[in-house]
Image (tube, helix red, strand yellow):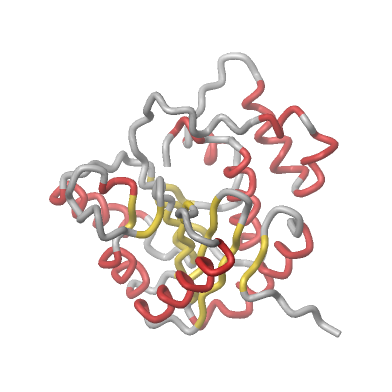
Length: 238
């Protein structure tokens, strides 16, 4: 996550998803994996804030809070997630991540300590789960969350919600592929995928959170059906 991304349309969907989990009774811990801003154009998708008739209906309260970004002098900063109460009751870890492997170890020790006790740990890397071409501790590794870190967080008892940018592959195949790999790698009973037009989120569930996760997924399907697709699809009660 970079501060420059804050409040774009991907963020709107992301906070909507987190709010659904919070409303289902799950406590949320947010580990930003914050990285330095760059000169790129990513994070500029904020036109939705000027189109309330199109976008406000998905989550009116969230939309109104993010509207504060339209005020003069308000910078893009993840600190506003807490200040504006975007995710009720959430706990945040907002230290900046670096490529250095020793500092990264310190970072995750501090993050897991700060977010201990949270039911769902949201991990928000710039790109997503590690790739073979970028080893942990090497240049550019801040863009990824690594399997060893996912194992540690899951073994600590958290359900994990993991951000994943879509790679250049067929999306309909990628979502079940990564969901299955996360389940197998971490030994989870179930992994749900939440796909949006630009990115996906994967919920690696602890078994004790099943009822709450299913409740949250039903809320997402009801309120965000045009913006967030769920895999596997939520079965409607007859």
